[in-house]
Length: 445
Image (cartoon, rainbow, N blue to C red):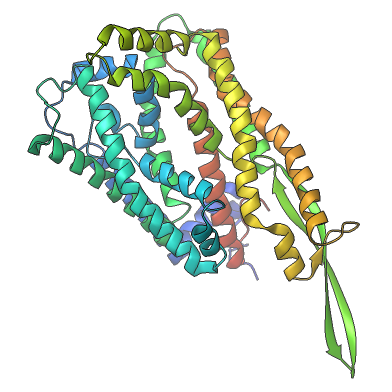
């Protein structure tokens, strides 16, 4: 019996989405999860405004206009890097560590064995991921501060083994680990994936200022309208491909002893293979590789042969400038290639053919074991072609949208759109499940 008052005609006439949100607020434990998630986001935004001392804000803004790496990392920090706060790195070191662990798991025997030990193995791998996050955060903190110092943002800072540098590095690493802890609290006691929600909160927090910059740009009223239309269109395509999946039919059979004899019972189900199972990871890989050469070259400015390294830095800065079409061609190709690479790495870890055979399942017309694995590999490769083309197209969409609209102060970010849509869908899916468990109508029914 549904727990909503059918006698209230106003309630009956409400749209289902609004009514589902009201139902979620009315359920005490769901209300506690929602409020806890919002409380943690408030804590995150508070930490994001605690600055590192000794920063030249004017030089900091100029550095963000010149360094593509800073703008890329600022997305994952939720805008904290733009203010050089203690949370300037955001959760990006943890994301990097997670990606490395996913790649190393099928290669390293110990990690592969742990991945097959159920919940205990997942907890140990997660523990190793946390350990790996600390040195990555130190390296990224040093690299970020080095770029900022070369850009004149930290004029009074001399790098080396001194207390000032150590304090800055430790505070930035501590800020990262604190955000990771908040994200895990949200995952455990709130709604959705906590790490993703932290990134989502940072993007949403920076959206009003981005819109304000676009509105202040004169003579682009038509361009802003066209940009809005393109934005909704891209969001629709992202939702379409994010939810798209190939359902492979699976049959299960088992023998039971009934009535003094053995009887075989059968059932049917399906394997949902997603068209875009890689998410935004290929975009991260591709963007990091594109901006890496120029960034490394910039570290050596003023070294043994400053003119040589400055020429290298200028070459990569001009060749891989987002204003050039070559940058977007390279980005398209790299995203397409990394989508295949990451999808196959993750797919091989799942061992679907072994799990099916162990549970008495089989694909009709396909023999269990190796033939099943080969069949699933072919299916994944085919659908990944569509997913790779989708991700690569979304990656270069900002370039063409900017050309068509003429609005350069408000650029659609592929990462931002993918993260926002993915987190929103995942959170709504969890609310859907919680409501259906309590006999309420969900968002999709």
